[in-house]
Length: 254
Length: 367
Image (cartoon, rainbow over all chains, first blue to last red; front, side, top):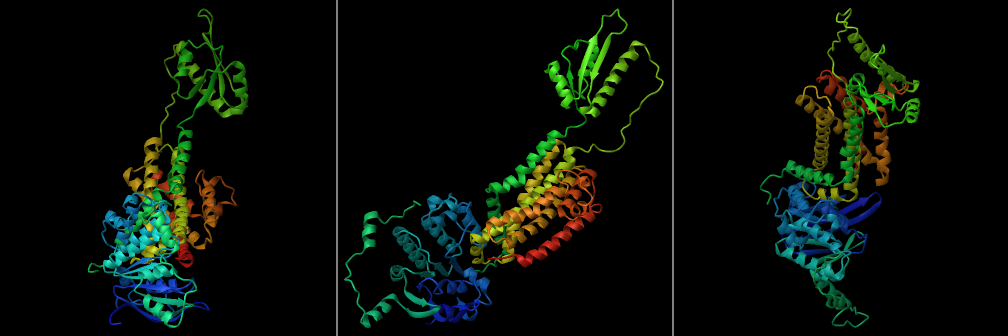
């Protein structure tokens, strides 16, 4: 890759005797949506949090936008937006007040209402964080990553626990973010999501990257090896049925 | 994109502002800092009136239409009670609920004496009964002297008020309540806030922004400081203007009290950091915080002077930081002490601060 925006070389992370990440190497190109896939415990979140400078690595080399994570953590934090798998906000603060908080934390004056509008939460501007539904909380969490107009956005399982409508709406939001010029790194264990969204994916298992390519190329490779699905695929699946029955609009109920 | 240098203080102020809003919306913070101390101050403020008040029941058979009775009515020391029958009066007097029963009798003008004042007192309220008696004796004597047309005095009593200010109950209670309010706000508030920030991963989300860790703590601490000082200012002003709490040099004393409050709060917050660091779960915070606050609540001269405690307890009282904060605040507010005069208590408080922050740095956890 000519000019990777993220470069990970032989990254290792141990917790005591347990090796969570066992020497992985990959690059992320500027402007792509890059997926880290894998079952629970594969090391996705650990890898992500090391790149986000939230966790120390044991060994290896990581650069983000040309900056070394060891020496330039604070500069990197100014360039990236981070949505954590689990994170909290002052529960009794209103959304506009929380946007003000993060605007201050990033030193970036922000039009709170415009930002909330971009994630479809303009109606909830005066609501407290604790009053939001799960999907709304995720959307707010993504909004908080956009405040510093980041070059790279990290999303750790953003759609886990959401209903099909909320999931699809988040996909649209993620595509919009990419259109604004940001690179997106996302972890998920929904393969349909990765197939829909990601330009390239790295599949992790047991702390190692076991495959790295575009979803299409990975599928073609599998078919070329003689794989066949056990059941004939119909032109639609149950999720299509569910969405056509219940509609695709954003749901704001809890 | 980051041509402008990142400003940690701006980020810190953003946290302070958000945290302050959060505190204002938390009922427990408001209750601990304002409502509790306010209730105690109100209770003691109204309880501890100025001067002495004698509850004297007027016998139903007493004559109330004469000059002696009028003189008694207008004496502010007497709180005359009219709505009791004779039997109730007897019972109340025996139980010490009233201090005396008064009965004024008038005689026809042609007989020798005009009035007879009967006073019934009991051992249940011996002291106040005595005072009632001497006050009445004084009134009766005045009438007797006038009747005898005595104008020359053999001796004169000239009472002179020596320098000294009336030390009111509020002057003792308010600094104690203020000190305790700072203690509970500092310990409970800080312990819960940092434990919850960690538990709900609010603090982890902060880590993903460019703010450095110490500024997160400073921001949170600043909001607690502002909130508690506003509370302190409110208690001081209310105490001063409603209950006559003495601020001897006015504004200067007021500002010195706020400065003492700030020093006290910062030290107490150190205890909060320690508690949040060693608490394993949310439910272990209250017992741990109570270990810090309750002994000081009882033994630091919050409600009564530590001189009242038995000698074996005094060394413990004299080891607690709140004792010295209370002591310093009383000296400043009432005696007008300057920093030189409160240097000893102040140094002990600061010593506690150094000790507790040394421990806090060791046990504080970010995750």
